[in-house]
Image 1 (tube, rainbow, N blue to C red):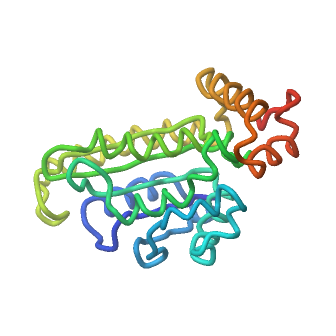
Image 2 (cartoon, rainbow, N blue to C red):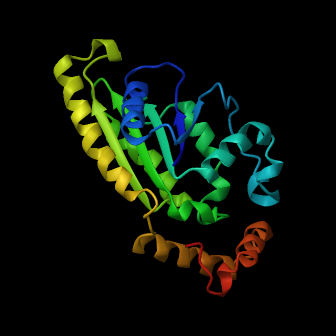
Length: 232
């Protein structure tokens, strides 16, 4: 199994340690894990130039930094996005990275490999906000086409992993174990839901009628999606 992990921050706090718990339960020596830490591995903000939409993702001014992450995501069977909660949302660094992948949302040029992958989003907070942070990450994976997305959010009631009570850590470990079993069963078996299929069909109709962006339309036409073909 190939796994791509994106950490929304550099510091190794509660979110990082929970990601590691999942990796310990999900992997063995035969699995390949690519880990990206933000902003170390992508330190540029999306400048809103529209070049990726209009001229292709390789024309992004930050292509050299985005491309290694994009390559890893394409090869992954499981994609893990993680971030501590920042004012009821994800970290700014992770948001900026995800903005760079707007071109591969379903209304534009979805990557056909995404429609068989599994996603896992993870967030922690001392108190609240995990639901909104996780929803942000889930929305990105869904619009990429990822058909099966799991979510884990935890109010750790502490400002660092070392400050979490033993009782709370035991609960986290049990929950991680249970969810990991479900994730393992899904990898390699994920298929698009009816919601994804309907949305994809609507996007196809829009591409047929729209002349706004020839780059998007040519991509859909080249993949045969305007004449009944599908990426799954």
